[in-house]
Image (cartoon, rainbow, N blue to C red; front, side, top):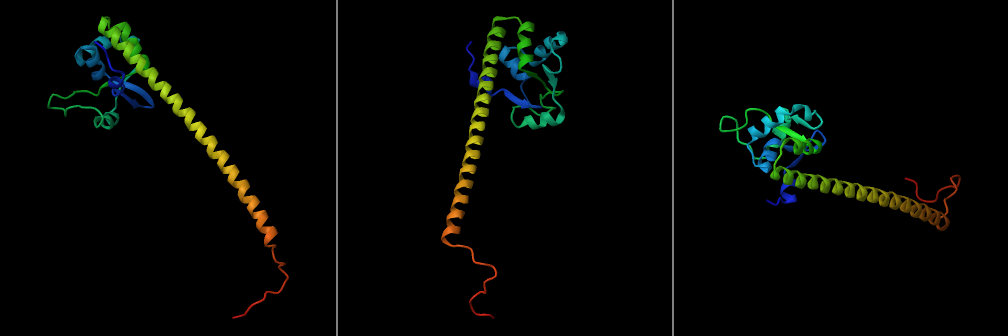
Length: 170
């Protein structure tokens, strides 16, 4: 089965400043139920420290609810908040889930994370270039306006403040 990188990219969310994948999405990709997937992970809990996998809080889950399709509890929904896996956690899954499909899924997911990192690096580079352009433009305009002021002073010399003004007094 061939996995589309764009399809996997849509399953990557940002939580706590990290790119993560939700347990139910990973289970779907690996072709197992979420419960079976999580049981396998829990049997290998030592492989998944907090920076590899963590459970969402109520607030985080509610914030993601609009982005993911989940049913309300009481209607076949989740009874607990989902676990999410960082890039390292997904890489660790390859050692826990041993099947041809798991290997293929992991390769596709790792390629997607790599693609996202390269986009982020490109975005940062472009942002730096725009900042440099703005700085250069600001300096250039400052010089232009200073020179225009100097030209204006030569054309219209400032009047002596001691000189009596001419005009009507009201």
